[in-house]
Length: 165
Image (cartoon, rainbow, N blue to C red; front, side):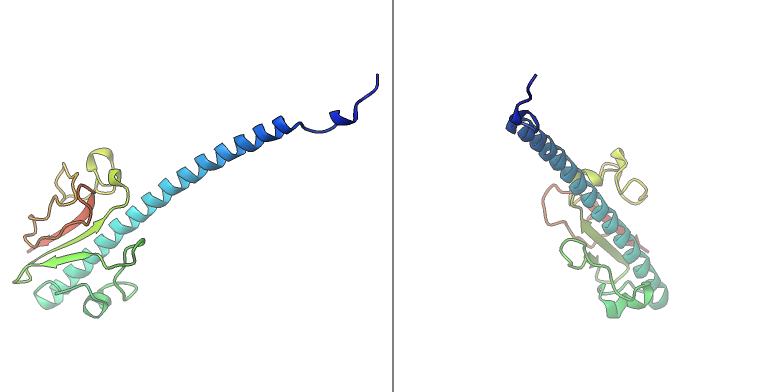
């Protein structure tokens, strides 16, 4: 039996099928990586808000009022890095508000993934005792500290941290 010259390699159809399968797998992998990045940034935002809250409380212990702003010159000495953390996506400062007598404050951050905040689903706020249990909207909790502040996107989830003395 004589072998044909053309039977030694792969056919064009076989190669196209393998390329299509590799393309589908690569797409699925990239989608999962984007979700993981989003969750990591939201966790970083939550941690930053917690650090800023601690710095504001330490400032209060030293000065008897909450800081007027979260500038490095104001609270830098209360942070390990000496600088206030910035949002990992926009590199902007986190939201901050203080009432007129500087006895109440609020720090907030816009989350990237809307499902990451809900304590009901075990999101990043599940261990935050001063957040209302039903937090789902971007402006929930704003009146609690009496100083205002809201997220930029309506209906998006936020991390809020409040301080009241």
